[in-house]
Length: 363
Ligand SMILES: Cc1cc2nc3c(=O)[nH]c(=O)nc-3n(C[C@H](O)[C@H](O)[C@H](O)COP(=O)(O)O)c2cc1C
Image (spheres, rainbow, N blue to C red):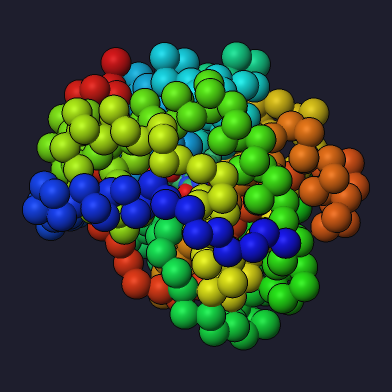
């Protein structure tokens, strides 16, 4: 079990920097994010504008490092989603596993948005990971999960530590399991500490790898201006960290990123959570299976959001290849590949992350 370390963390660096710069620009970020999350009212758009609205909903999905690793091609009665391989993260995700999981999240949003706009969406996954989605008229259906799309966020702050009723866990599990996806609920203290041990082991590997750190820093956005200019990446304000002038932060940040500090943060996150859901699948299924995992995870995230819950991910035990087998064994998952580690609970919302404009993702 990791002990509490008295190291100066990245968060501490940024907190000091914020005093230096006198800069809290999260309000600007949140106002922009709220505008970006306004979806067109069902029935108010038609033709190509309706297809663009479905893409808009898809882009509000989560993606690893907020890379938004997708591209959309509009047909007359169809939309194709392709992986944008220029946005791969080879250090943390060498086999593109989380890239395709992210694509699955976007597809789930698109399917829900299509129903809200009176279209039945039938995704067909090609061998190359491209997904052709045929759209046909159907009775309009405003699902609760669709309504939750603009509200869903990855909330990395502490939760309130209260347990969830068994019925709520069952509802979340029913929503997301099936179709080759297995969920493992961990909500007792002893096993949550084992999850934390695995996260700590993952951090030790990742933060001693220069390529991992370089890639992470490349996707960090140190103030609202930098976040708005790119419309992607991890804005520090979304993690509760104050902004710092990017030129200064980029020069200093590597000195202060450490496994110990990140694990301290994870300990606070895990110990305040109601529980963790490990999402697992048949690893041999490849991109089609990973897209299925993304769709299942997004159903879980939207169902949780609709129930007033928050969630975030602690994925190091599934990102570091050598840890995956022991992690699966520790939680009775046998030969399945653990895909995601999701913590769930009740907590204060953080500023929402930004997205790139539709013009940047529609070919
Ligand atoms: C496949 C996948 C893996 C992710 N892994 C992590 C993770 O390990 N840690 C984390 O804090 N967030 C993780 N995220 C969350 C993303 O960083 C987040 O979705 C992105 O920054 C956009 O923010 P939003 O979810 O609030 O819209 C992951 C998301 C996806 C889809």
